[in-house]
Length: 387
Image 1 (cartoon, rainbow, N blue to C red):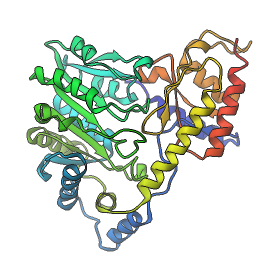
Image 2: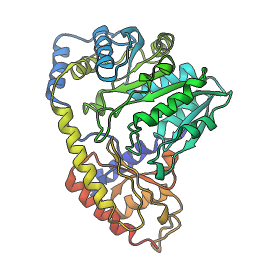
Image 3: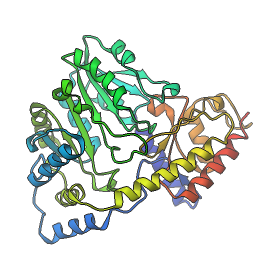
Image 4: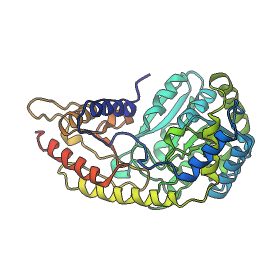
């Protein structure tokens, strides 16, 4: 397995900052907002109420019930509490599903650009990743024709993500319907729908893949509280799945990790059941930052950019700069460029190689607008030295 490049770059930038260097981090996918007070209050109350024993492996019953209500109200999906498993973040949910579903030699279709851990989680399960690359000209979204062409008798699973990390792009209902039609034809094919960014959409609507009734019983919906509620450190993710697969994930989790932190679960219950205005405020802040960073990047010569509709990333094409040099450093690939920007511009980004898109880099705009402005200024100056 490879090291997660997003976490590696974040660690490197933190180490440099700890040494006194002025580093602006645009590398980590983490909201820079504090967890809302009503959620923190629920966690404090849980401590006072002595939620200190082992929790049930699949999660507390009332939290699973709240998620069941959430699925129905927000996504139009009918998942009973028995079909819901609470895990230590959506990443934990994903690996539970993949280990429960994928056998050695099974092929798993991963549209690229993809989130860094999908590929290696498939490898961990003994599966064979089949990368289907989406073009910048199509907003980094694969077509139904591409999906159909990648499916064969060994294909077991498709991993789908909208809004996307790393691109921020959002599939339309029509685009998803086309993919669902292909999936419906292949009765032995399953889908993981990673919807962790569903609450951070600026244009259009969020559509759950399981809402297409012809494939509902073969879709596993993955979500969590990290991004939408500024709760990354609380480590709460969850799935809605066919009952037999939820049971398998429950069994696996019971042997590997047991139940998730009791206090974090009580906080998640407050988040999912709450009616605060913080989500809308965070979404509007991300919208302003998106507009800012895109306007600044569009002024840098030779960068190609599509404006994302969701999440908090931009994924510009920087292929022009590959093969260039400042006279000391030669840029062979996007990882080299990311290291060059860290060392020369003091800005942390993540090279596109980690996302299956070697001609791009990922920038997270989950940070202050002044820092975004300064970071892009530094990047522009550093890139101007490459020839």
